[in-house]
Image 1 (spheres, rainbow, N blue to C red):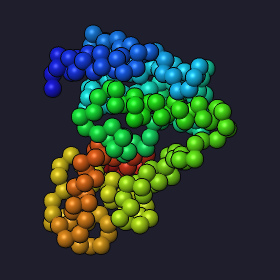
Image 2: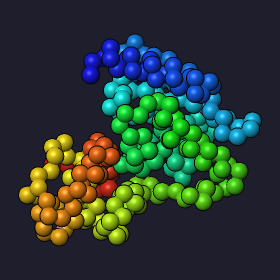
Image 3: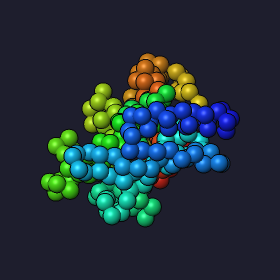
Length: 222
């Protein structure tokens, strides 16, 4: 996809976003991508400042939400990455394309990820705890939690199983049926979890799987 096409996509989606969320405005960048700024109201009289960066590689790469430190502390326990950039942790990486599937737009991203994030922050400010729906841990424990929810068929997968599945999900090439299944059964994939792996690869971005693999296990995909 060339730069002109990406720009057209962002511009059209920005117009749709402004209609759905009148408090938000898109500014296109000359080099590609852009930034969405404004306010999102989560309760009567309660709004959060929005600074959503649209990368030049959009829609292949998801937007990044930067939190206002006057509203949301840049602390890991407030779901802001601990790298002093203010980047919000909206969900587990490998869950991103489950909430925001391929083909979704900027409005969907705000509705499915940004708005719930701000609503959760407001709940925390009000009650001193996260909503009853719970929260993920950070780092390796959170990655393991995310994967456990993604693969209920495995019934509490071991760390070695998670690592093997992440390796397979992070690969750009499609796994072959004659390869060993990552579940550890020593069976070939075609006779074990082939359909399961195929389903996961359709909704997990290989880039996210590679980042989780590196963070949780310090290894890269092959």
